[in-house]
Amino acid sequence: MTETEREQTDEPVLAAENLTHSYGDVAVLDGVTLEIPEGRFTALIGPNGAGKTTLLRLLVGLERPDGGRIRYDGPDRPRRIGYLPQRPAFRPEFTAAETLYFYESLLGVPEPQPRAHLERVGLAAAADRPVGALSGGMRQLLGIAQAVIGDPPVVVLDEPAHGLDPGMRSRIFGAIEELAARGVAVLATTHDLNAVERSGDRIGVLDRGRVVRVGTPAALRDELGVETLTEAYDASVAGAAGTVYVEESGGEQQ
Image (cartoon, rainbow, N blue to C red; front, side, top):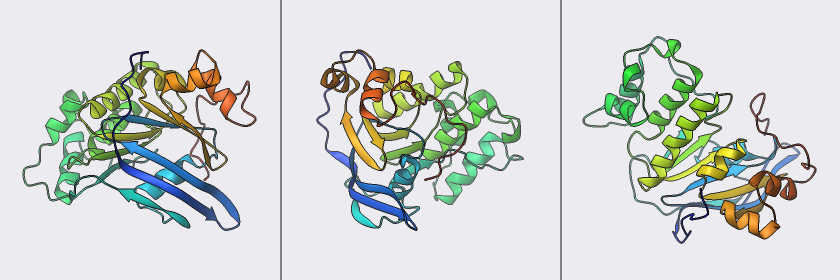
């Protein structure tokens, strides 16, 4: 976002409240509190192993927290939260349109419109192409289209631009901005700090299982007296000075 970032006054649609979670003896989340407001793109950043993917899995209900609670205050819809994991698995022999039709059928959508969803994310021309023939970026866009089937009030995306070229990253974040502009509460993890600085409405910095900072890009820069989000990241994350992780080589072990 620019210096004219929208004021954050919305009530949260989804919120984590003092969440804790461990895998065996390994504590992963330690009292995490984070609000996801309507019509905003909230970016979750932090080093590998900070607990980002675990937090997302708790928020979407794939795992249960050990402590704390998750509060949903959005409208009561058949699909409250749309989710895109870091590595979505689609049937390679299905076309893009068939893939979305399958998910619409699962949700009981009365009048499936897979091509309309594809057009919304810029994939209309690939509607009849097998998923196995799509590029990595096109599969991610297909994943975003899948995540918004049923018009969920909240969409959660885990590294949607991971490993993509700059042009495709721009398309991914453009799709995210469009979702937020339509009133969707979007939460996405990413290591692309430049894209977050351009597109993010709010940022949560997660380090060693704790949210250490939350605010708009401008607010974080002002609070820390720095000029860029990269500098704010360095100042916020323990041991990260001079080592900003702008890419992950694989999924987080969290």
